[in-house]
Image: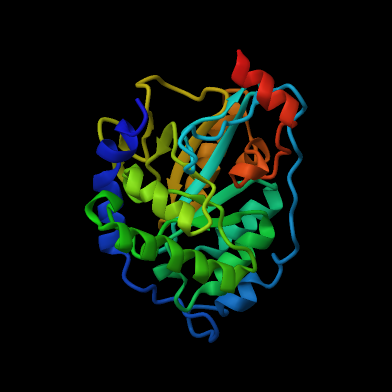
Length: 288
């Protein structure tokens, strides 16, 4: 069911988020009657964080695409009871969420829409140092399939350039808005240095209403319930994220799972941190 939940079931929520995403009123530098500045609130959460790698043999690494373009990944095949929390967009800024990620030591991956970096670059910098990689979610959050190849390339390349300038690392993983992409998207992504596209297998509609699951509901792409090993879970940067994050962490714990860093389950050749399989292993796999 690749693409069914991302494109059809989440487009309304995504459009709602973009429509609501006017520039935040919280300012980067100055404090005021509402409290201390964003910078001072984030000052205590700037140390780098690293996440443990999975045990050898506990998962099957995603494979390159036969056509040589960035492959599309929507779940990780693993025996571990782990799920991967990914958070999109970035139009809300919640310092309490940064503290939560850091103090609870929870790995996440951010797919950043770079229009939301304006005036708040240090917020995502603090998240980067709390352990979140900053990956590519375009400049302005369009449906990529509606754009020309050149417009798609600009959306991806310009976002990568902004993230590289702000956070010192060029993105290598891309998430198309709404999960909507075509071959031209993958070609443009490759031209921009992207090594894989990461979709999702489940969504927590935090801070919004999901089709058939209500407000703050949870839905699986396969129509099932609960978590499955290797689920990639989609969330969004929305108001109240810290409380919503506590909620999903409780669900994960209750079902005997734990959050893990998805980059540690993706080979370096596809933009992750896991070692690539030796050439002999790749060759033997092709012969089977």
